[in-house]
Length: 298
Ligand code: COD
Image 1 (cartoon, rainbow, N blue to C red):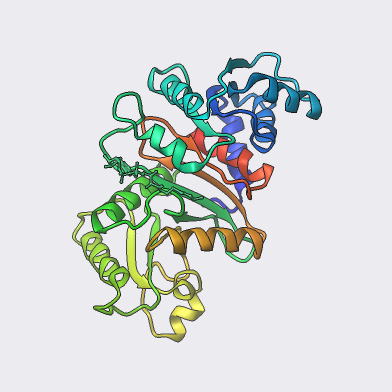
Image 2 (image 1 turned 30 degrees about the vertical axis):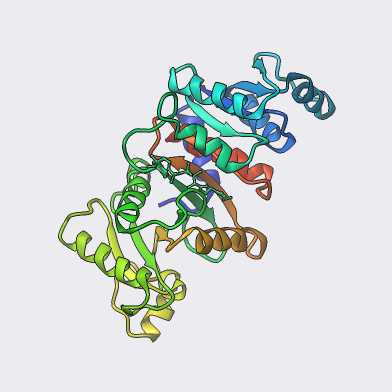
């Protein structure tokens, strides 16, 4: 069980393999901070794709040393995304990272049928949080890619996250499927999906994890709250993965944890042919660095 994101740092330092990281639209000071830290730590080899003069101006201003990095000059943002995605598609890079470009522009490139990074299964966003008030790392998914996932999408989102945590050595992660309440309400689709996911898990249609839901947020993360409500659950109070009903709930929770709870986070897009680092401007440099580590481990 991982308690902090610095545990990930230790893990990756022990299994150090330099991965080639393609930064799409590289003239982004926040991304360059994290990419530089990962480069200096020997975790990645950067390929910086974007406006070379603007990228070099940031590097000079910050006093960074990118002397062994590859620079590819491209002024058009969509073209820079295409070049970065194609490098990963052609196995010339191992990780794709979003720089100064809107998320949908990068994701549309990733989903391109000809040169994108599709695998035939659903791609989903996976965020791993370290929150002082919780006893272990907790994943939140999907907060940034799938807007309104249906039951089929939710199964794929669970499988992507469970697969990642299994690889990290968490054999049977506990998945809480969130709703506004912990009872099934036929007018609340999230609770219906949660009940179906739980039953599918019981019947071994979704494997390598323990799923329970619907659970309200308090029951999912607090054993006392669950006990108070008389909920008997293996997951309640010990959740590893919080499955969100939709992107709005997920995104608000993500930002609430970061801004109000001062949580640390690392996030990555899973389910593509390669991991994708997709952080937002509001993330700290440390979060971006942790996200590169998470991607390097994927
Ligand atoms: N995984 C695999 N294939 C997908 C996925 C996915 N998650 N999403 C769409 N596709 C495939 C579809 O099957 C289809 O073949 C093609 O891609 C286009 O599908 P559309 O028309 O539904 O998708 P787009 O291109 O209009 O939009 C895809 C986005 C990922 C860009 C869109 O879902 C989106 O904007 N998501 C939210 C991104 C965002 O704003 N995040 C901000 C949070 S900070």
